[in-house]
Image (cartoon, rainbow, N blue to C red; front, side, top):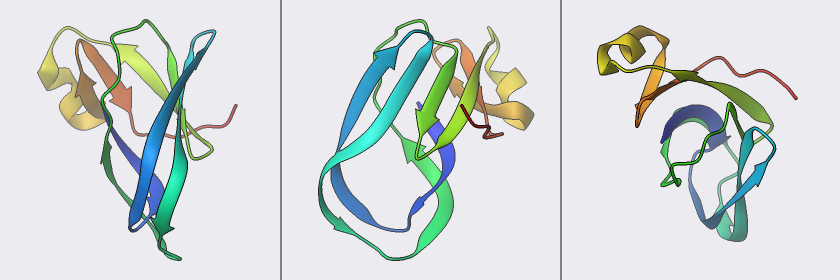
Length: 92
């Protein structure tokens, strides 16, 4: 899964995944190094194929929208195994 999100400009850490109801939570654990600056950039995460409607990462919540065509995602978000992940963060 690819998310375009605000995060550290440079970080060295493990990634933890947690499922609660319809939300996949992605967070850092065992942070070895993290820059003081933050920036928006693409983040690639390996996630299992489980049904969820939202992804929460760094206090940002992304809607996962069903899609069968990769082209549909080009203007709206990132493609993930049959889903578009929209780039508009909201809050839970």
